[in-house]
Structures are given as structure tokens and as C-alpha cells.
Image 1 (cartoon, helix red, strand yellow):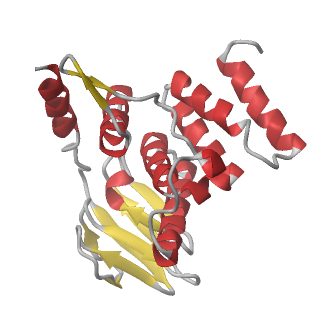
Image 2: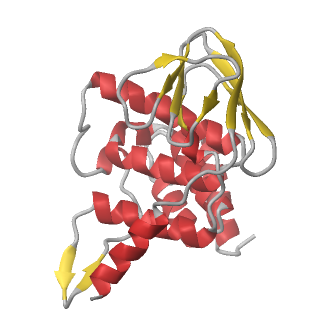
Length: 233
């Protein structure tokens, strides 16, 4: 069956793991580590070796430096106020990103069955005030989501565009209020563009162009991106 075949591919693709080592080189202020899917955070230690399925969180006065050796030695500076999943410090191929985006849509969106074919809705995620549903969690969860979005900005700033796009889209879908931020939305759209998914990026830029309260500079930036993808400039 085609559905089973699709699901099998998605499950297989989800197993791709970060290689190399992740070493804590510096810690300042409050910095915490969460192991795997556990719920408890413990203080990070200098020279501690972390695993890909661990996460890190920095407090308001916290910062850290990680050495990531997956794609050559690379130092990652974690600023204050971020949550980052260490498995996101990797670059996905275009095909891997497409499969993972499809998997997110299968998990998050309602879908229809028709002749044993899985009908996945339009790729564009609805953000902001026009999104269906409401904030699914309490204030505490929303604050944690903001820290994770800060982590997505860290991924963008360090060149991990594919995992930034995945993380950003997931957060915007689950927490519509995060989509009221131009910077969040623009970052996701540009991450898709830099991941060689111009169609997905165009959908995000087009959606962003309707965000209320855009400044003239923001409108010009979005229009410029749309024109560039369409080959109009």
C-alpha cells in the first residue's frame, strides 16, 4: 500500500543521527542539560561530553560554548535564554528535509483517506491570528517555546538552515502567537530558501506579506524576496 510505503520511508528517515562528539568547553551563569526525553534539567559541566539526543538551556545570565565535531570541529556559542536540541546541530540534505517536513505534516495536520492515498494538505503552515485553533498549552509552555524559538535563531545564525526551518515551522504550528513576530517568520522562510526549497519559501514569504503591522522596510524585504524567487529581479 502506498500509505504504508510513505510511512515506512518517514520512519526510516527520522532515525538519522548526529555523529561526532559534543563537548562543553565553557559555561557561564545558569546553563543546564536535559538527557534524552527526560523532564529534569541538571547543571552543565565544563568538559562534559553530551549526546545528540540531549538538550541544553541557558538562563537569563547564562551562556556556553560547545565544540561540535560532526562536520569538522565547530564551536557553537550559546547566548542567554535559549533551548537547543543538540541533534539539530547537523545539515540535512534537501531530500531528508522534504521527508521530515512531510512527516511533520502527517503528524500535525488532519488528512483525508482516498483510494489508499494519503492526501496531505497544503504545505504552507498557517501562522498568527489567522491560524486555526488556539495556544495549546499554558504560559509556562509558551515561555519554553519562546526559548526554543531563540534556539532556532541560533541554528540560523550558525548556518544550520534545514534544522532551523524544521524547528521553526513546528513551533509556529503549535504556538500561533510566535507567528506574530516578523523576525520569527522571516527566519523560517529564509531558512527554507537557503535549504533549496524555493517553493516552500515562497509560500512562507507570501503568507508573511499579510502579517498586520509590517513596517515599510519589512514590506520591502518580503517583496524583494518574493520577486527574487519568482525571477523578477
